[in-house]
Length: 182
Length: 170
Image (cartoon, rainbow over all chains, first blue to last red; front, top):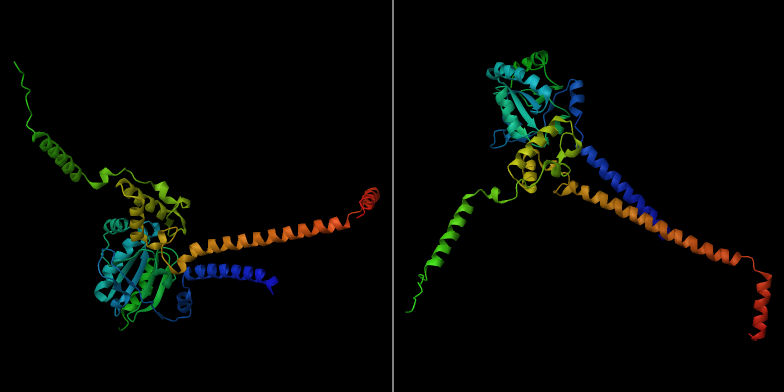
């Protein structure tokens, strides 16, 4: 019996290390379930997230926006495509805010002062949250920046864009949601 | 005629000394604390291998081109120029990017794996080496005994040994 004790404990040790590594990789991997649900025409309820505003203050929950159409945009000031889409998002926000819609920015993995300079540079007026370490992004399957998730008035994910948004995406995916009842 | 030495007032020196000490103390208090410390206290290069570029998933030292890494370096440089210590800069980085910015996490839970896995691997490796060494020693010793037993005997030496044994009546 003792003859097998050492090889068995060696195998167990190696399996334990592999298990830990697999767990680590698996827990950091972005969720791809939303993409699959949208592909089948289904709207899934958005994950519950709470984040502090970029300017500081009490945490804001996504639930606080229930009843509005939310264009949730993950961005960072060092991200070049984010620079390109920000003026469009600002124009779109101004267009929809009186109709029960809003763009909601989430600044991720960024230096706060850089993010604030970015907002001043592009005169962004829509609300901004801050996710220091990107903890919430994996729940939306965000793997790069920018990515935009569109929520309907019931807090369900109705569309998403993995990459910069354009006028067509916003017009075809967001404007119809504004007509839906809360 | 006797010369009288001019006597200094006895209380003057301590009063001067006290005034000087008070003046120096006030000056030191007026200086910013950072000016008293060695400045700069650390460097970007010193921190680069101890913090991560969170988006790149590598230590900052390895992320040379990534835009986020460049911003992070600039942020660190700003703090270095403000004469912040290494620990203060790490704290500021955690406030900006969260715990995951530390190359060696300080938290518990799964983050302990960063320490446990290398330790476990080291133990396993050492154990395997130990077992291999013991087996090698055992096989070497038994081979030596086997070889000795199987070694051919010299007839002349055998005869000499026999003669010696007879001579001493053993």
